[in-house]
Image (tube, rainbow, N blue to C red):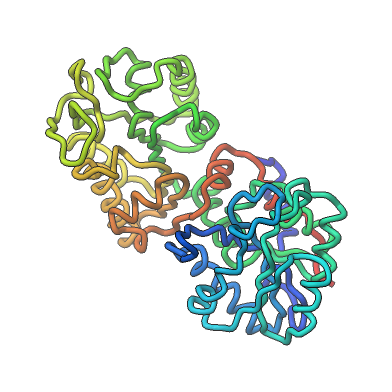
Amino acid sequence: MNNDKDEIKMSFQSIRDMDLKDKRVLLRADLNVPARRGKVTDTTRIDRLKPTIDFLRDAGARILILSHFGRPEGEQNPEMSLAFLTPTLEERWGCDIRFSPDCIGPKAEAVIAKMGEGDVTLLENVRFYKEEKQNTPEFVSKLAALGDVFINDAFSAAHRAHASTEGLAHVLPAAAGLLMEQELNALDAALEHPQKPVAAIVGGSKISTKLGVLNNIVQKVDYLILGGAMANTFLYANGTDVGSSLCETNMKEEALKISETAKKHGCEIVLPIDSIVVNELKLNAPSETVDSQAIPDDKMAIDVGPKSIAYVENILEKSKTLLWNGPMGVFELKPFDTGTNALAHKAAEQTKAGKLVSIAGGGDTVAALENAEVCQDFTYISTAGGAFLEWLKGETLPGVEALYTAKKAA
């Protein structure tokens, strides 16, 4: 992470710091929501934006929402228009939503001209313009011409240096929305200024996709608990035969390097003591529990066993902070969600008791914790995917960095 981040945060501005009455607020949101046949199938991102919408409406702002949807690759694609979202936004936010068929120019200006204090307008998909991804000064200027203030509330898009995520913060007074603020505070509590001891649960199929995450985390946490096929790769690197389990044998040296880095920083890497193994990957497949050091040649490990669960539960009992990214096994196929569910319930129990700060996010993590029915009991769950992982790697996110250095409102 940027070594100057603590100093930079002194200039960080929240929407609470701004006079927004009658101001045209360009609000960058992430409304790239799951949808099927023109219907939203998961309103989580919409619901999490509501506090910012309510705050801006109460403050008397004129709210102009910028967002992307899908990958139109700079083309005007009707199938990726944001127009279909209007009824869902009205239902979830409890207010009228206008729609502009363009995000810049005369069509947008015509809609904005009719807005009053507290009104909300959804602007068309910013990625209909290739200049959005290119972050050209000309496109930034066209967006900026519509507003007086820029609010970024899209942490999940903050790893992109696009016009609507990064460029606008350099030309308009800028601040973080309530959701962005919440995300940054949660991540700061998890990695930058955590209560110790700190445990991290990292699962998933490949360490090759999380090399940066693992290398950074082992320098900051006391326990790195590995699950899924990622754990198999570390077992293999340590000389264990993992049978027919999913395993990246070509990542042996990288796993050993990460283990060495962990040792230098006093981080214990926790691998499965026992494993649930099957002959084939399917729902309710016949299974058995074996020592992780003795996985049969014709079987694959797809979940952690009871001894592993008990050992990690003990770690969670003495930890003060938990960072969770990825499941412990093939949670999509029952009953092989047992390990993930058990640890999720333990983390939730410790959190509710006020003994643990639990932060989760990225990849399949949200789905796994929803499956365990514990989302409401964690301290914070991020819906960001790529941005969450980039942060865990220690990378600077352009959309966040721009807010740190943005000019204040007059």
